[in-house]
Amino acid sequence: MNKAIFCLLLCCIFSKGYASENWQLVAENSPPYIGERLMDNGWVTALIKAALINQNIDNDIEFTSWNRALKLTKINKKDAILGAFFTQSRTELFYYSRPLANVYVGLFKLKGRQINYDGSMNSLQPYSICKGVGYAVSEAFSESNGLAVTSTRGLINSLYMLQKGRIDLVAGTKEVGEYWLKNTEKLNEPGAPQVEYISPDLEHHQLHVMFPKSDPNAKHKRDALEQGFTAILYNGTAKKVLMKHGFSQSAALELIDFIERSSAPN
Image (cartoon, rainbow, N blue to C red):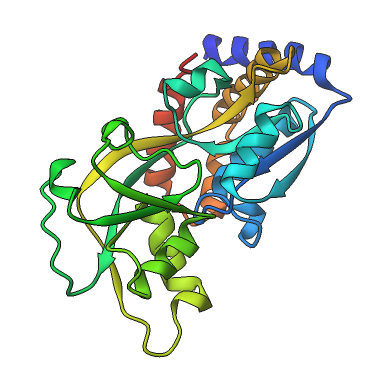
């Protein structure tokens, strides 16, 4: 109890330094986590907004392609980018928040198509693979020079190319790809072939907020967001946000415990 009170008092102190700020945020549509057509722009966005409100920080969000979002944030045109995977190379350019969600990245194929994938990069060499520009897949995937990889603007376009038979596989986030396959008119045209996610996963990732090191105040902004997260986890706001977005009480508490135990990686 004393620890909780101390954290809340600390959050109040930190919030004063950011009382008049309006952050410019950027993200790619990545439902069910983040999306301009989702309630509150998705539950991950809702948690971030609640943490910023706790720190008296206003915000505006632009939704664009992932590659453009990265470029805008890298050159300090945006204060932060939402929904980023952690990679070691990105730590040279960005500060990370604590993780907010666990996601899985893997491969999509046409249903009924025989793909001999055993989890190794060597088993993928016979196939043409597509991914979004700027997407992080896995370290092994990035370092494998023998793969035939092409890129599109985003996951929807990659899945569409798969349906048209132009490629053999799509690398992308499992939950996001499955959402697009169910909810995108372009991927549900009459006679469109069915697509499925295959095992094993290529990588397990987590969703973070990234702040550009080109901004001299980036670390202070990251720390202010972290203080906001600490506050909403203790005061019950995070639980209310998650349950509003369809989480059961037990699932909400499990995620809150994960976020509480996590820390910013750099």
